[in-house]
Length: 356
Image 1 (cartoon, helix red, strand yellow):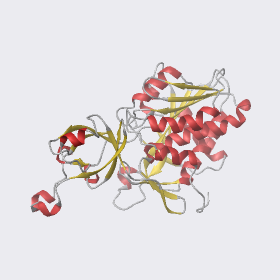
Image 2: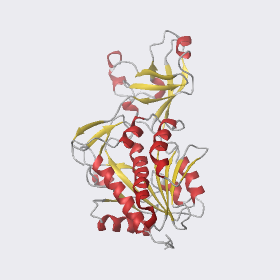
Image 3: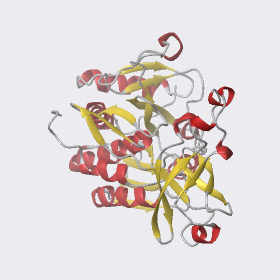
Image 4: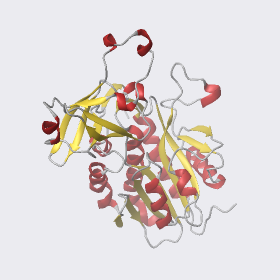
């Protein structure tokens, strides 16, 4: 991918979609548009998952899992002056919330707002050292009073930061919600490419864009239980540690442009891990290794123990500044993740299992 190329339209539409946990409709529509036409079967479920399937009659199966949801804010109180108070959807760093433009999804369309708090000039020295609590911040929609605000916004409406995609330099780009629009793009695009040669595959392919990962991997619990796949590979973002103030002794060494991060540890089936590494090496796909001794903070932790158990792997897209309004990735890494899933799947043989 050269620096003058545009980002893939599928990825851009997912990034443009506003889809906080529990309100994934816009991202669902983007996934439907690109993945459903390439699928032999396409399913929707009650939690909001989207499931594309190739070769539905094959006995050996592999599930790819990315998640559609992103961080957001949810309105929980409107005061007499028309200021909106909120709770967070997913894990926010409170230090980056204030002073942001936000887009509130309402039944009548988008309402623009700005997150506010007391200005630094109005704080004493002690207060300036504190990070404000969630209830000490608000959203300003320029309402004249409570009635005006309630005519435009309801309690329960959700909001996302108004930070959109842009290239920084070369193939390195920034956007709100690469976590995990990047992962859902990768699993959807892998199915689209595999569809072009599905007759030669010995496995059923199930590509799932899960809902509600950020609030407890809920979509993955349901999709993995229903699919009962032989193998699975979750795709999420992982921490790139190639920036200042990141102790590699604690967090490992991962860089943008270094390729997919392949995880090993108790959450990972060793057969799947080795198959991912073999596929990368056979196809000259760069990769990085991560050791994680715990259940990972991804859909993999739910998939592994779903139903009778699933032989699960995890690949991660290196990302800087996770859970902030301006996350950063290298689009070459996303392309290499897709190539890895395709190569891994083409190597699967009928009758294989993850039993070890």
